[in-house]
Length: 287
Image 1: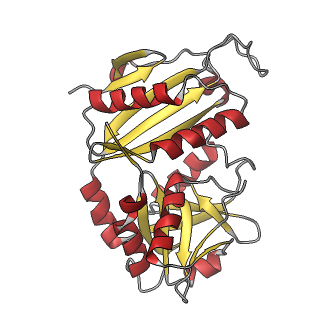
Image 2: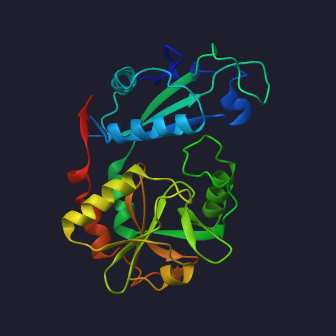
Image 3: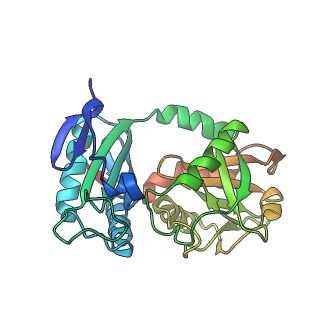
C-alpha cells in the first residue's frame, strides 16, 4: 500500500508530497515539529505532544495553524490512511511560504502544516533493548534554546552521524565542564550506585521530552527515587545503569559510553522495569 502524507490541507501520495521552495522551514529552519508514538492503534500522549507543539509555536511567534481538535482529527486520519498499527506520526509546522526575507512575512501568510506516518518494528526495538546500545559523547555546540523543538537540527544530524560511524546508537552532547545535556534525539539518564534515577532538569538546557515526563511518573509509581540534576560523563560511566528516552526509542538501555562498559554491560533492572511499565502511565487515544 502506498503511503499518504498530509500537506497543507490535502492528503497526497507520499511520493508526490512536496512543499514550496520558499517555505520558511526549508529556507530558514523556521518551524517546529513533533513525533508521536502510535501503539496498538492508539496515539500515545497526544495531549502532551500538542501542548509542547503549542509552546514551541508560541516561543517562535508562529501562530497555531488550527485548533487542537482539528490537528487531532488530521493525525488520526493520517494514521488511518497509512494503516499504522504500531509506529510514529510526524507533525511539522512552519511559518509558511513567503518571499525569502529574514524578517517575518505579513500576518496574512498562513503557517504550513505537514504530517506523515510510518510503521515501526517494535519487536526489533525490544530485541535491541534486551541487549542495550552504545553512545558516544560530543561537544555541546547547539544554540541555547534547545527547549524549543525546532526543525533546525544540523548539529544533531552531525552528532548522530558521528555516532553511527562509531558503531553507536546515540551521541550525548557534553558541556565544556564535562556535564551531559542530552542526546541528539533523546534525553539522557543514569541510575546511581545507590539506585537513584538521575536526569538533567528540563530547563532551557534540554528539550522537555514527553517520554521523559512519562518515565518520571513511572519511576514515582515504581518507588524509584528521582534526582533532576546534571551529571558528568565520568559519573555516567561509573553508574550502575544508563539509558535514553524518546518517542522513537521509549526507554532504551545504554551499556557502553565512549567504548567504556556501564555497570555489568547488560541492561539493568531499573531500566528494564521502566521500559516494561512505560505504557501504563501513558495517555492512549484510539485512532
